[in-house]
Length: 239
Image 1 (cartoon, rainbow, N blue to C red):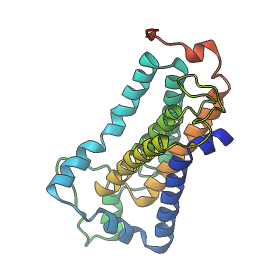
Image 2 (cartoon, rainbow, N blue to C red):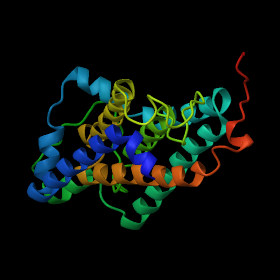
Image 3 (tube, helix red, strand yellow):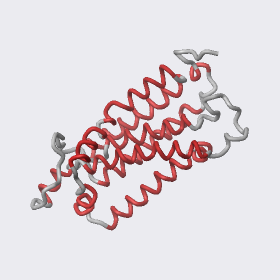
């Protein structure tokens, strides 16, 4: 776990900072007001962008996992897929336990005079709001890719021996990569608020679920990183 924190410090720090900001906002601003503050910036271009960007969480993570299994190390693909599937199952379980109303349902009951700025062409969901499944998928995938790309499984993916120069700390290149992955995930989480499919609290919980379950998947697979099956490649590299 120490290596997980050290080599992915940028991604984890940015995620914690975001959680602190969202948590502070949740404590200080009423639920309805906070949602309106964050979602009331619609333009035709943004509507189109977020309408399609948010749907990436519905198929992109699975495509990436398949690509990792086919073109990368088998263990890396299974690790990413496990984190994604388990975090998704956790989210669905919580959704059905809590059965919280979506923004359109909540505002109709609690602030009926408010007209939410909805996006044309987006089918609005009514229930099972908490937590956000799309946000969970975005962060589960991004965190898994960060772990894989920075060589978190004890060694780098190129087989560089742990401890050599360039492998013990966060390089500028890895920091940039982690920042980019985090930004894409955070953008996905915000898309759920922009489209009024989720409240801030739903996104907050989705981030925690995606990060937490992926970290648990890392602990499960980390011990097998030196096994032959983990390093098996369906498509062999030319030597």
